[in-house]
Each structure stands twice: as structure tokens, then as C-alpha cells.
Image 1 (cartoon, rainbow, N blue to C red):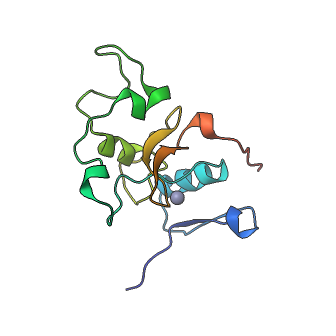
Image 2 (image 1 turned 60 degrees about the vertical axis):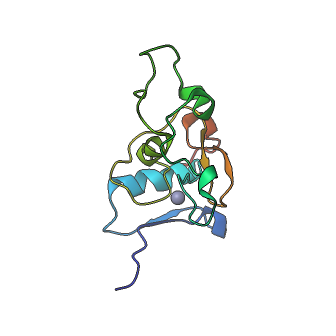
Length: 134
Ligand SMILES: [Zn+2]
């Protein structure tokens, strides 16, 4: 059986719009709308990169979620035992299908972008710089 395209953002193909298959879920719709607002895919691993630069079990830390870190013991939005990798999987802009998606960060999140670079990826409200019209 062939691959099923759940959603496709066509903004980069010169046509402004989103194609969503009838079988797509709300997570895919949210993700594609995020792209229309100029947010980017974030990934928690790149298969061919050395393991020492992948996230593994590293816990979430302030420098990786700068705008979403509320600081202080017991005051963070995310619980302290959450790994960075698991946090990325919760984001609407996580670049793989995942039914745990639901969070939109306030700011950028450290992870891998779609090119395999480890950077602070535009995954949050502060990174939205387009306002799609209906
Ligand atoms: Zn995407």
C-alpha cells in the first residue's frame, strides 16, 4: 500500500493554500495551519546523525525552550522530568504523525529543523509572521 499524504502546505509551490485529505485528523489540520502562519517542522531525531548530538533522554532545559520556561522550582509549564524529545512530540509543529500533538509553544523550540540542523525552530506564537485570510 502506498503512502498517504495527510496534509500538504502549498505556500512554497507558489499557490497559497493547504490541501488536506478527507482522512486527515485535527492534528494534521492544525499543523498545516501552523505552516501557513510561517511556523516550521521540528524533529527530535535525524537518523544519520551521530548519537551524541541527538537528544536521547536529555531533560527539558531553559536554554532550549527560552520563551516557554517559566523558571523556578515547580513553576515550569512542563514537568521537570519531561525529556526535550518528548516535549517536541507534543508540539503541533512536530514533523511526524503523532496523536500526542496539541501544544503550541510561545517561542522557538530547540530541535532539528527539516534540513537536519539543530537550531531554535519557529514552532510558537512569537514566530507567526503571516496572517492567513479566510
Ligand atoms: Zn510540516
